[in-house]
Image 1: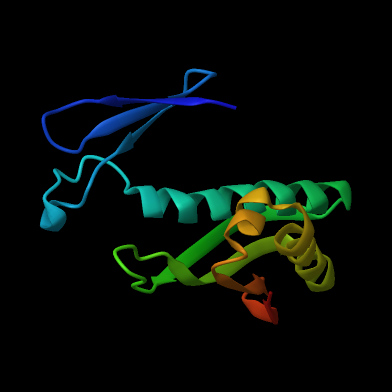
Image 2: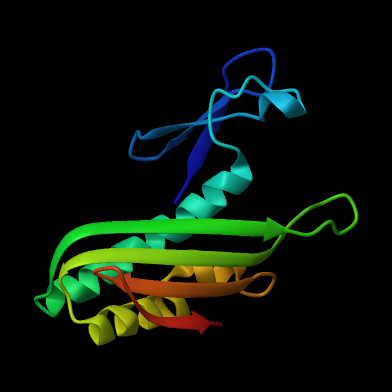
Length: 146
């Protein structure tokens, strides 16, 4: 796996391309001196958690013949200043699923993703506590923390 970063302007706007040709824009926020022309690297980490777990959870539920109508994941990261860096210390995930989905199966799929399969979450695990809530058709299935 390899990505290539190219500087786009004279400031902090970059485009990162993977080896399959997909491009993502990166930038600093305007209030931090950037032009706000893309996601920040830390936002991309949270997007990675959402995407990785989303792929896992949908794959597991599809294998169990659950019918998903909507699938929304909100990922919120809290950072802590450590020296000059500000890594994530806590990441909270709220997962909203509608459809003909058994809440216990949805919760088990989330457990498997966050605790076993999601490489992004496993990468962040040593430095950030990840908690997640699963809602199925508007009802809270349960809250989990790892």
